[in-house]
View 1 (tube, helix red, strand yellow):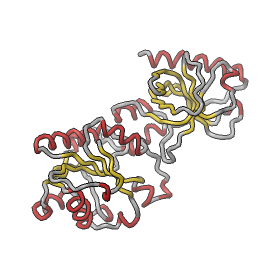
View 2 (spheres, helix red, strand yellow):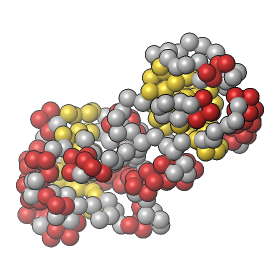
View 3 (tube, helix red, strand yellow):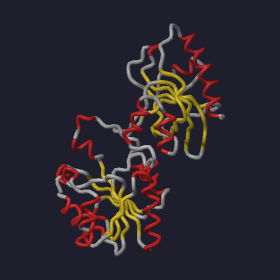
View 4 (cartoon, helix red, strand yellow):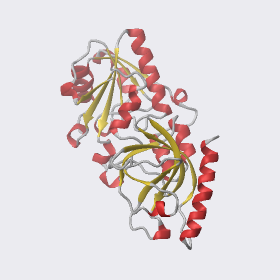
Length: 308
């Protein structure tokens, strides 16, 4: 997959099969669109093009909303590459861009810059200023625009309406299993291992303190989780805590992972953490000894979950 930073770096194609959207999370619904996109391209001998917008439009149009994203752009690109997309165009989303009318967007972007011959869109996808553009408008004006348009029906995407918003709500409330089901994979975060206060080591459960660098990345709710860990070629398992560590009066929200049967210096390394299931909410204990006892129980629970 070739990643293009803006339309300026993209060379117009003679037979582009196109879809567009934020594709945050690349969930089951998105995956149905991508499968259809690649099928259409194979039949017509075209190249697949996915237009996505960065930053997420809600960040620009409604900054007070404080949206949290399921995927950073880099994570999204990696997932899209797995679905055989030929070209990923990252379009800078600005207020000025949002003011393009439907016809301006179609002519400037889809026709003149990309060379669209077939447009595949999801159910109720809209575009252009104030989201005025619709499938019906495209269908009515297809001959004028010079390309075909196909909408993936709602029932083909899923019997249950899958949306990034619904997945965000599930993850933010600790319902990891629901979020994972809709995503079609385990939700993950990535971050750099930073120096911590070594409190976990004193309790017999050394942890790696993770700093997530993607500013809008969604972090699940406070609590303890069974997780999988990827570090370069290493694949491990463990348990992770998110929260303020009330037992030791932590001042800041932290993300700390205890990797089972692992004792290496990994400061400065990038870890990928995949969430399997929530074990419990974050609790405050009367003593460090009671916290240590609970961590032992959490380890047993995590192993039971991860070995299923």
